Length: 71
Image 1 (cartoon, rainbow, N blue to C red):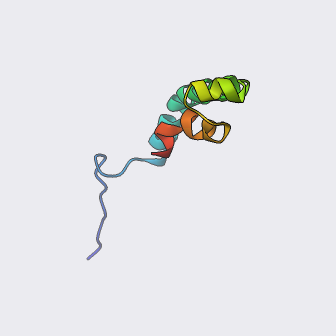
Image 2: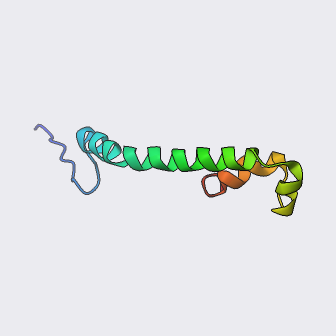
């Protein structure tokens, strides 16, 4: 007797659907990366004194910009 495997669409997403989903999220990912890069550049351009007034050190800039990703 032959066995046939059935995959429920609710449990297994097709590779095509995964690829399309990834493509749909690409503009959002690029926009997010652009915002983070600008914030990193803005903070990096500040003097150490200006960073200290914000409660930051130069070593904390990346952690601050990417805090939600790193948590």
